[in-house]
Length: 554
Image (cartoon, rainbow, N blue to C red):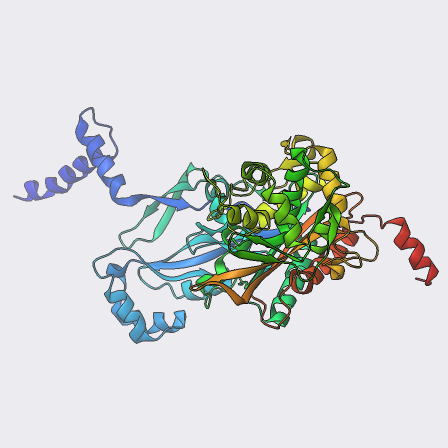
């Protein structure tokens, strides 16, 4: 009996050595080893660093910072530690217990997300049973609400939700990695066994925005919308030669760093998602169609007496009887009668085709999520009133960027370029001729008279730089047709007019201070933004302005 009892430990030691030390030839050893590893080895996710978003000059617009998230295995939490854990988390014990109760059948729950590392360390120092941590990344937006509508934001899991963050989510996100660890029965990591897969950081993105111009556009638009009591507004500033969007601002705005009280209406990038009837801002496009048709030439005149024209039962009016007008004066005064008579003498398809070639009613090509392309009607049979209203900007819908593309084409000798929210190589800009360069220049010269004395937008003129542009004032649609007390005020302009560098479109939606004409509500905003922008870009002022400045001792 003593011999048998003494041999049992030796037999046990031999069995253990056979299982764990001496490699066996049969599959039992491999099976037991794999089972042991399956119970102790785990794969931990290594989060990838999300790519940085910058403006064209390298200024940060979106960057990720490392943070610590605290999580727990609810089945291994010690109920006796709930009060202490709640105190460490800054949460009431009752609320924490209620949260834990929802996860009693789970093995994972977050206790706190995206804490500063030092704050998380204070909690982890208590070594609560079943409580662990992981490193994540939190997105931060240095420009705040100034560039929010373009940049967008990510959710708590670092997935893009709006703007560029959403449009280029996979490009920015990269791919996570993994490491192998050994855990004890309580889930604590006792050893790291090495890297299984290295995380791959996301790609960086350089936007076309110039943050200096973006601040200018945001500031002036916010001030104008507030002062005029408008419902909303948009501004787009575009590089004439490349189609790059240098500034895109909207009101109302939101702060992507604090989204606790955001309303859905604040999230819309209205320059791309909202459409409107462009009103008289498309009259230069109608004039280009007239010149292209061969029926009209630069020195032709139109008799607009007696100040109105009947189209069917509808009377289209000018503010006064302008009499015989040159084609240039029709643009200068924004004559409804003049442009209607021209339009009715053309084939409707000639006007529509011009609008289409200038980018209206089609995607701007930015790839921005949620863009509205608007409506450019195409009919087999056009009624005269439909032709007339199309010619002066009713019966079609466009967004702000589409209008900017059209004016950029006029300013660049008829060369059309799709808009871009990404910085582009100037030598690789894709463009095509939308209209003859001579015709584009003639219409640009007509638009130079609009900000001059006698034009509809004298408040758009800039002292040091000549401006070309066009006002627009469109009635908004209500349940009973076009409303008399609701308007969209617009100004579309180019500067410097003699050597175009920038195109800017200003849209003020429903100003309520009584000044709703484009020349009153939108033109001054254009002047302030463009003047400062040209100075920031160090565009040389025109010589006549310099001479005037020297005379007055500037």
